[in-house]
Length: 198
Image (cartoon, rainbow, N blue to C red; front, side, top):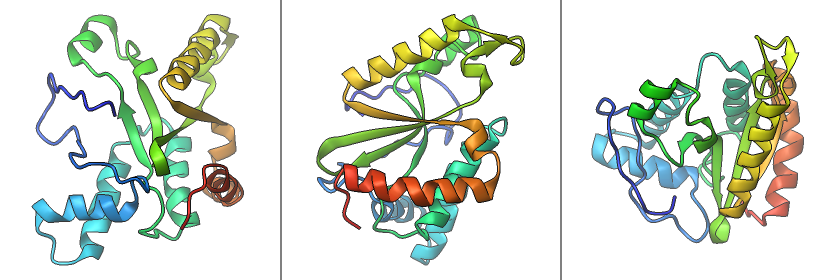
């Protein structure tokens, strides 16, 4: 996001890096389709669109149905229009697999965004899906104020870096129909707020 990219490990193809300039109008699906289609030589834009959608969907954690439902509902609510802002899943500000090996899988969670939208004029919006693991321990049995404090500290850090953060409770998104209804209400309001034209 800040033009400072370094890949320190992982398998080929695990990490997607959009290596083009983000337009003033923000990053739209059509920009991602073009970027995905060119080097892969798809015969049609529709094939490229479908393949990219599946690749992005595959990047979501299977342990979070709410994230999966949000991603699918975003596309359904907008009818996969190429002119709408791209919803980027699992965006990392910092990722170091060695640190994860040494400190455990939750070591860098404050450096990961569930979803990112790059909107007109450099506006950056983060969508987060919060399950009980964000504010409890012992598998959701005991409230954990320290975890909650870490979460709000991460929000402050993101806001100071120029990101707007919107949080959804996992229960709001646990059923696909509910996720679609929620996004059909939320997205037009958010687009108006950030002056996103379609």
